[in-house]
Image 1 (cartoon, rainbow, N blue to C red):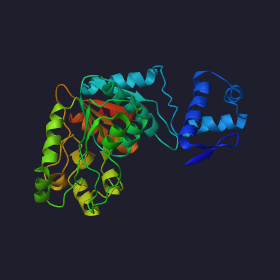
Image 2 (spheres, one colour):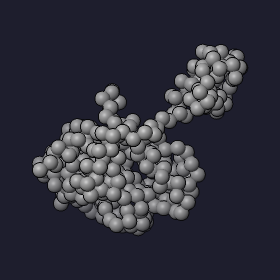
Image 3 (cartoon, rainbow, N blue to C red):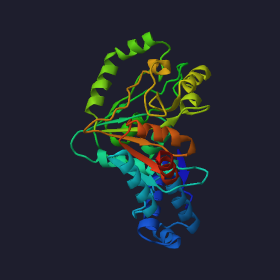
Image 4 (tube, rainbow, N blue to C red):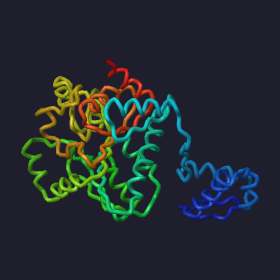
Length: 326
């Protein structure tokens, strides 16, 4: 793709992005005015504005607040104490049209980057879903070929349609880490089919890697009409009804659980092909989620010990604590 520069000369997209990065650096880091940026780059003021806007649109600039927010810290401490968490981060509430996803993505990316910065080889496991994809999109590119990334579940619907690229694949592209995706549908048609899939060598490799994982990051989904599993086509209307009647309130990596945080026996769970989320010594299992529809699922997962760490927003944290107050 070719772009036209401010002077009329056509620039290839990489050169345009480099120029946008220079303009953004001068403006945000160097503290220059737009007129000064324009003068240094020998372009018009309007050209400088367009370049800075392009840098923002292409996410070349990432804003990360470096000041503690007292209300969020207090909620995080209360959650950590209430559920004996190893890690807890609460981001500010956002009532805008995008909801809490942007804040969760930045916090989750920052947390992943700490693990990826380790020079010693590590195994990291991720689930799938909108929240995890947003987190991975915020991770800064880096060179980390020593690490291994594995997926806890696939992204294939019952009809064979792939809904999206798995977060582990995107993260491997950004970091150069070794990638182990899950080559299965989220839910198999029968128990026998699930057993056959899980007998394959690729699956046994994933199961062995999960035992070595130091960090597991998962999205926490609700169970209801047009909930993530249902909207993505992983489960049918009939299967959703079955889960609701069985008392399911949330799911992690396709595994549904009840209000007390217990995984359902039988039901759709008998055909889930992915790896069940675990908490164990030496591994941090981080659940990421926020929003009114996620409160019950998040509270249940924490209450049942399915998570030992959490990233959420202040409205969700406050609701969880209110629901668990005695």
